[in-house]
Image 1 (tube, one colour):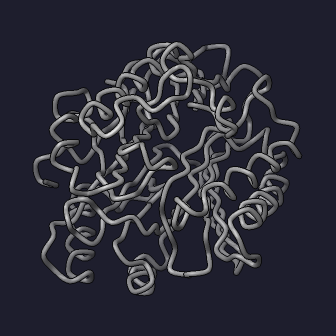
Image 2 (tube, rainbow, N blue to C red):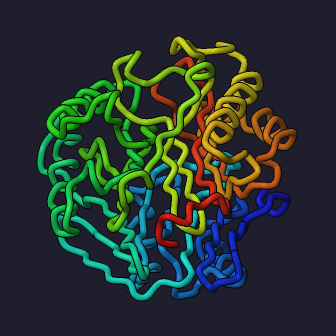
Length: 374
């Protein structure tokens, strides 16, 4: 499957500050070490070893056994590295996604026992990725609150607060059918503490099945922050006639966030499923029709925000049951995602009735000259 799919996309305006996105899945059949080295060779040969690497996220089949070797392979890398237990749906042991930012003036990476923070400096902005490495408390509710308390300290070190600086999170939840409610309640209470509401908006997010190598760690979160934004640069993506605001079913995250710069826009689409304007599951039990509806919802979000699905640069497709992979991939090949690098992973969604979820990053040239370029 990997050889048939587009694996790299580029946004480039010719100024040397372009961006590249990679989505690559190993060919199945080898040991983890063999598949990992083959995948990294392919990534390197495709230009993935440059100093502009910002994010490198691995999706693996067995993090308890594989994380030690993977950590050795990527040791010393000057980018933010994330390892998530989400098996590739093609039966291989490892897949990767990467985001490269051209034109960085510098990068700094701080790794402590508590977590990792990677800061990329541009002329007018600082983009940072952050993730906690350990859990000192038990239960998904308390661990979710712990994640945000640690992120509070990260944001303060960047000169702001979580609501002001953090605009995208990816939350991975071990055994989501049992632990998602604690995630939701812990996040809701954290957002209440920040004073966030449907009126002044939450943070774009994906909350999905995923695990670390540590069995007692029920949650971990990757967060993207941006320092230097002015009022009006963050715009929230909505299509309420297609998919409901999340607070209607008592969760708190934005459907997507558009960040407008002088030269481009970034679109961070949260995990999106087959949902309607009232918050109901559409096409229960039919994974093909759920995939089509999910794409319709994503299209509506993009088009209401000055973009289109053709502006997607990468996507991650999460399946509850990897037996559905061929049906879902066939539906994707009949959509704009046929031309977008994407991964297909086994990762159940927050409600058992949702069989597929998709998130993604889009970039286009719809900037606003009243703001500084990225």
